[in-house]
Image 1 (cartoon, rainbow, N blue to C red):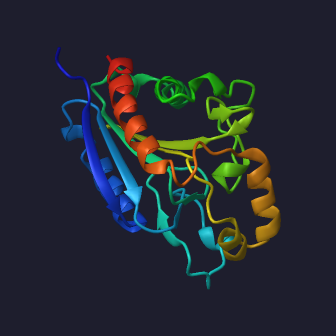
Image 2 (cartoon, rainbow, N blue to C red):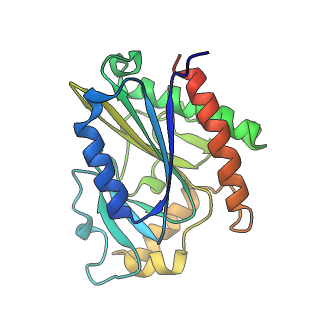
Length: 231
């Protein structure tokens, strides 16, 4: 059977490097023959932020623990560490490009939910359907929006998308291991209140000891499931 998805496991790198790669990919969307899934990991703690956000309104300028990097997509600020982060790039010739952004979230997050089921977590995961679309605050982990992935009523991931005449770029992160809360509190303006809200509204999929194996299993399952979903 002809494959419907190119998959790249890009390894570990800095947040600035990965966001530069995705900015470049936006310009190359028209050159893609089929959808592309790029899986990558962060070599050090980081925060990425949406294209239209000024992070210094929310992150202390003098903090040095988290590397800051701007995304080519919208959305809020999200801390990265031991998580499951990926980009889906799609040319305008693919049917996914013609769908509304909200429907793309449903398609991709449904594939993620099925993949989590294969990894033993799917029975606990649901898509958020009772939230308005496009609802978000300055931090991704604070505010569920429609078709986010939820675990026992708490958000376990976030996504943002950019669409051009050449195609679309979808960036997504699943929260695997909780971030360094103490360092995050110190790095943010009104950090204690921000972190308290994140802890109330978000959940995490595995422990640091289980992370490597969980990531490998989820990467394999998601590549297979997304390929089927995009046929």
